[in-house]
Length: 316
Image (tube, rainbow, N blue to C red; front, side, top):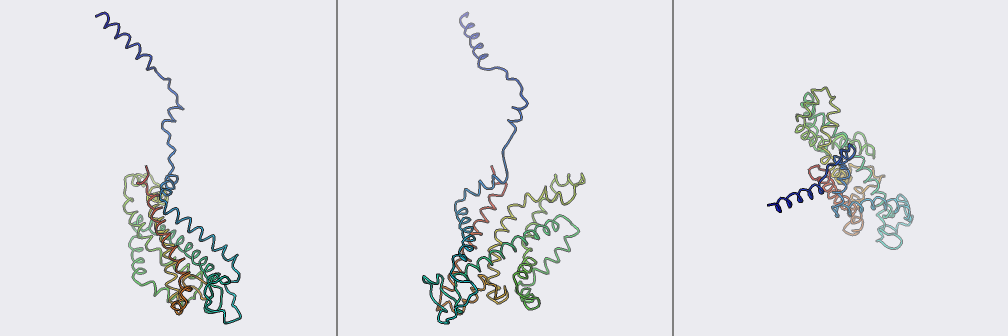
């Protein structure tokens, strides 16, 4: 009995040596509650895990950079006409890397200058319709008094085919880079605004938004701080898809003669010019079509990958 008691006392003494009270430190307590989580850091970490999207992003940026380099290393100006008419329709060779077109112009410089024009147009239009669509969509979904008015405007614009608007603009106003940008922004905000409006309707009456309105928080602050962060993934996806969509639309309009001025080379105009000759001279169609395809596929895959990465539900 005495031996058992001694063993118990010795065990208790050993436990006392293992455990001891730690003094309270405010700094240490703050460190245990600190998190280095960053939303955008997490977005890019998730995006970089998608190797295919990262590779295609690099390909696109390389394409943009090379379009400037290509014009510098090109032997001719994109507008220069070769005096000798025999130099028209020359197949790609050491002198003319992409061949020559029907007028005898160097197709290498034509293609890369057109790529710059189309990419610049697509970026301006995509950014413009994104900003306009987000603003209208937020007001459309949050301010109840504007719902009927904006809905009627949406229905009127959406009902009439785009080709009719662009035909009237080309005939009555003209065709230029600026006119094309403004026209596409004025009619392409519909999809973005509708998507944003539907999401705003979902989040408008959440408890924290009701509390913010009760406390007198301005509408713009509620939209910017409470609702807009939930729309980031949708906005990014639409922005990414708007770029190849704009290039495709410009190509279609230029093919129909409703796009940019013929004196402003674009990928759409090159495709339109090639329609009469591509059976005999396929290179006139292949080179601009390949660039349009690369841009379209790249932004489709990259847009989906970045949209998934920016969705907070995918963050750990």
